[in-house]
Image (cartoon, rainbow, N blue to C red; front, top):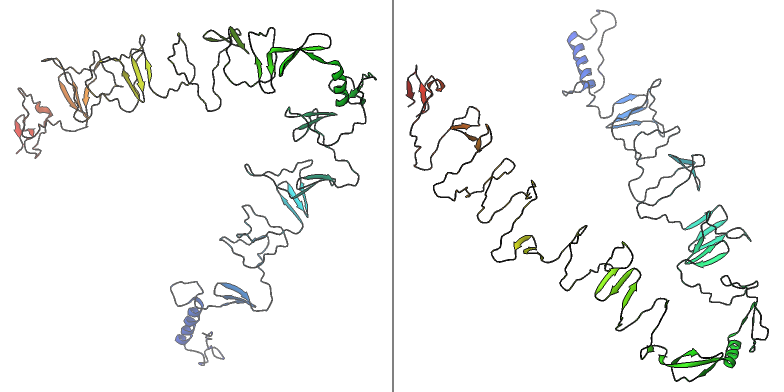
Length: 524
């Protein structure tokens, strides 16, 4: 609707203006146009695209400008700020010429293909990324890159200090004619595989031999262990040079030995012993065929025999005492041979130690967890699964604490399958409970079953207490009811009613006693 103007005439009261009713009717129409014709006063609702002034327009839920390619500036006055109090979605580009300060989290991207691009220097906490350079902003601070949990940091190519480069499984220098140096800190060694380098010393890190598969040239003196240095290798059958620094070839050693060693009195495979200056004598009772070393007859070995690791097969008979690194075996006894040493018997890995015959111990004490799979028989008591039983026919089980000690039975309930005989008192944490259909029975004919408390305590059954000659209910203001089963009746030889304690007016309850001026009456 277009705005309706009120005709006020040319001059005051000249009679050419709108009548008063017509003028106010136009005013009402203009207000209706401004505020809408619905109940939401003060809301601009009817105009879907009201003009906000100039070329700025409100169209639906959008603020638009009528001029093409024109910016929309929201400029608060003075030091005021622009606040967006709800979630804000930006579907186009967000360009900020000043600083952006965010006190909460900034989530960038919500899909795998989204990218976050920063032009210039990017700083996060104490880390700075400038181009392809990652730097700590803390003076002399380290830069640490850690994988999560057992995760690793993977680098396709690594260049250290511009001189050393690691690509795939290759470490090399990038500077021409530069050395590649591997050095440990302090007294540490450089370990390559299983080869250890300590200064100028080369050794095996896993105690195995070091093998050189190709030809080896030694230009200096070769020293083995603490011996004399070797300067050359000579091939002399007669060993004429007699040098203290030269080695002989295999051929020259064989040729020289063949002229010196003379073996006499031997048969095939017998082990030789020295019988003279240059002669060997074969021993008929000691033979070795390349696989088996055999001793026949009653040969003996005296003194100390030192060997490397030996693996033997077959039965070994030892007469006398056998001492094995602190353990002594003699006759049918195994014992520790060193003073105050323990004797330990242990299996390997998940193996177990099996004792297959009856075992007798003399007052031994076991410390730690002892697990027995199967039945444990101790004197006349057997323990199997979760049961403890007497092994003897009709035998009893006695559990006796020492002195004032007590026997404690754990668990939520203690079950007695048959009769429970108690010679003295039973204390059950001040409470005695019985299941459905159970009862306490006096087994002696015509004997009372006394249930007694200490001091002024009461015998309490649910909410009724018994003490001396008094029955009391524990419910406040509750009646005490004697209710026989079925058609049974409550039989009382003598009853005493205290009138002062009865109601003084008819309670209106059939059969209840009440006191009418010291006259006992029954409510009908």
